[in-house]
Length: 342
Image (cartoon, rainbow, N blue to C red):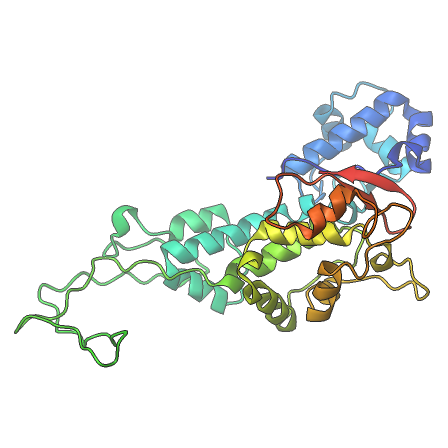
């Protein structure tokens, strides 16, 4: 569950907001904000199907002869007929909220990979990108890593009880030693010691970075083109940038990298071609080098780049050692309006 939702600057000046206020008064504006808050918590995808007009009134304690759903529909904030309501363009205006369920499901699958690697691999082989909370609790290993206990799995995963330990296991071949010139020593007549539970495999950089990097890109740079799919080419590019330097294997580094893009009007379309940067450009070797070297930063007039200042000193001069705070001025995609982010 997410902890907040976005309201764009200019909301109270928008013609739809003014239309709603004219028909329902200031209370209708407050009720709309309450509906958005409720949806962020209870219906993060913005789908209100199953709710009647009366249900919506109850959610926000609306007490008027005109149902709130009618007012919101006429103003353009609510789509669909009764029982099939949807918040208008919710996923577009609040992508972080709309994708919170997918992020939670993906996080559970990653967590399962540490506790039950085989089950997680089987799910990924099926093309699954996440699992529900019920699936996670059914598939995770029992306490104390008792692999002899049958794990109850959902119908989507084949249920196969783990075999009970044999009283006298057959000798296993020696694992390949790290030094090929040495062999593992064992006592005569005894097989090498086998741990009761092998440690979970380490999480590879690409497993813990790609989706998180895309999420940060959407969060910090919502005006730039959205990523609909993490293709293999994108995975390869992110993996290459992630592993190229030790400090880049840290999501805080990527957050600041995307923040360093914000002061660059050029990347938001302020150029003679109206070209805007995308994730593909920002994770390319050329694009990342240009951002980090200040190639696209605004210059002159005491703004960002050299000389001048702010944009939190151009994101702490491209975040050496990642300073304690970020307090940067932001240039929106229209190249004019500014706001402050932390």
